[in-house]
Length: 235
Image 1: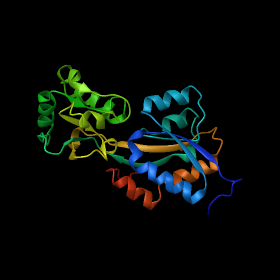
Image 2: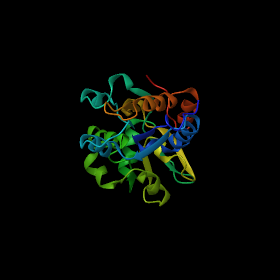
Image 3: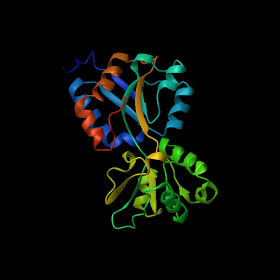
């Protein structure tokens, strides 16, 4: 049912920009269905955490980390933790570009070492994982100088401007880029799933509407939209 004017709420959301392609149309539908208004602000996880730590008011947080950390800090209601889905780290190029072979761990290392420039999400969850992975594989000294990154959405721009040979990240922040070619995920033994979760602030001004939004974003129709970004339902 559509909320009456007196019942309509404005919900403030801090969200990962990686979800934007599916999130924006879903939120628009939620607003039409409920009469509520959603004010969304997108940023990488460290920026979101910094704003929350600084005491900024919000109703819902949705990002590529587990909100359990915020629950442990008594900033997010424990019973509001909501899992939207997860995705592994993979490789993308523009159509027509050379397709590197990363089918084994050794071939992944060779791909990284041979590249002239590599795009990652930097402070995004997948970017931080790639940084830790090249350390673990013993190639950080050679690969770090080649990595290019930036603010939320930078990986799309790096590919679009042909400033990198390829991008190593999750798929969501790249969806919608013309001529994008997703080559698949890196080998399972060195992969890591990025899990998107959400929660409601313990100080939310609109807790009921906030919970309704999270419930809407986990309904079957929403799951289908996130699936288009390569995000699978996880527990």
